[in-house]
Amino acid sequence: SENWHVTDPLSTGAVFFKSFTEFDDDPVEMPIDTTVYINYTGRRLSDGQVFDTTIADTAKVYHIYNEAKTYAPVSVTWAEKATDIKLSGSSVVNGFAYGLHAMHPGEKASFCFGYNLGYGSSGSGSMIPGYAALQFDIELVPEP
Image (cartoon, rainbow, N blue to C red):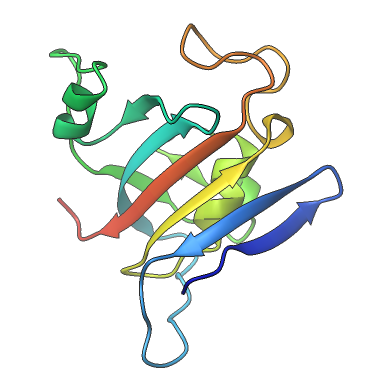
């Protein structure tokens, strides 16, 4: 698909979604209460700086590599409601949850959203300032 698709799950914001996967027929819906695996890269939309990734080579390119971290696909517990999705057992920001919830098995996509669906006015750590718009590149992968 060449176009970004806009969802408006909340009256306070939108998630802009673009799939890089072509489906011959209607894509299969993700089964509820299953565990799937993803590789992801999170970046600031303002300058493209990566702040988190599951891919070692990407971490090295953006100078965020940490030898203590395991770089591998992470588990996602699928849920009926986007806000109930868990990444390795932990909750995620709403923009990430809504973008991920729009995906289908085997899909690769990017999505971005404003600070109101991310880390708000306070940001997160030294890499994500307050009011930061974020982009995530996600690939649903087979179980590692």
